[in-house]
Length: 96
Image 1 (tube, rainbow, N blue to C red):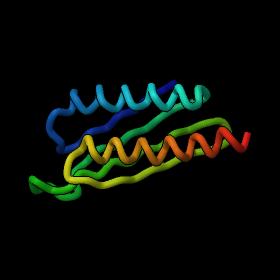
Image 2: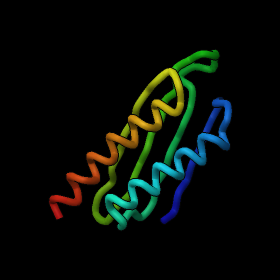
Image 3: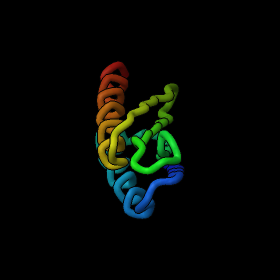
Image 4: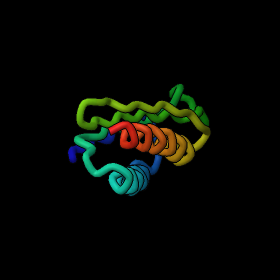
């Protein structure tokens, strides 16, 4: 599976990348036919302490899943976006 992670204007980018990789591995346990994943983490505005926005795209056979979440901390936004994608993956898997 191809994974593309883009982090803009957010501190601790290496730590966030590791966190995202761990969450993607958990999604692969739910549905192992994920073709690719794209994750974008950015601040809403350039000012600090601006809310962080996370956009996630999962590409599975015949379907593209998407979640966009916002939170004060990047980790919180990542976790809520992954929870939303987890629910979408379960629904997609059940329909097949």
